[in-house]
Image (cartoon, rainbow over all chains, first blue to last red):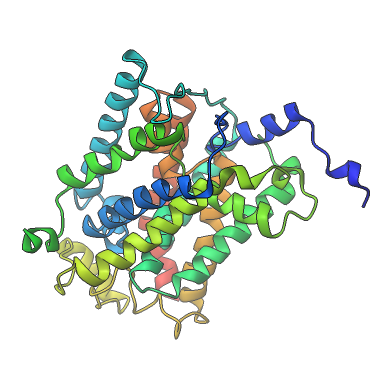
Length: 169
Length: 187
């Protein structure tokens, strides 16, 4: 394969990255690799909360979908409220990152994938009792067989990417 | 203090802490909270296969892979040092329902009566682990995000497409848990 087919224009790349929940806000500063350690620490704290609040429990998710417990609704609801309040504060007070850069937000565009994909994701969530975050934490607590589920989720992601153009959006 | 931490945490402690991940990632480096993207980066890094959807500079998203590595480590730390050995207390009706399908072990985060290496190649085990994982990965990318990217980050920034996605997640989950899962568990 020639080198040019791998070349992607900057606009194209931005478009590809923006179709996702991933971050398209790039830092203009050069960061050393160890700057990523702060995300490791955030992830560790987040993972501990996941385990301690039993968010990663298959049983808690089953309770949620059977309306047998308020626990998960309380967690998601209060997390969203705190998130909303934080984002509002960041916007209002024009809070910057610890490196002094502007914090930016990008709007999500509606497409039918959010419905079709959402329903498919929901079916999977009800089966595995875990969305992607908890999968990592479940492996961490020692349920090693969940590695199979994670690999399968990566395979699902790949198959979506492969057939993306043929799917209705 | 450690004794208190070792108890299961109530929703009103855990929920706000999870919500704080949103401003934490923004303030640490202008990063949008989203976990399922890590699966896409894994594809882009390991098997891009010339697919346009995976042709981007995944190295710029290393932070996201480091973040999920942290979640894994957090799980290990919590399980080894911050936990009490008691089984999870779930709703009586769920206990009764699951007993019908032979699920009686509540000691793990997953139902080990089905989700275990021994049961990987039973019909229900295969559907739950391999099938469920596939649906999660495929659906999250099709929807452009998962519970973190849409339900938490998307709703926090008042994106109505994220509300559509979140409602779809819940509908799918209700259908699976109440009507399809019972069939799968009886296989």
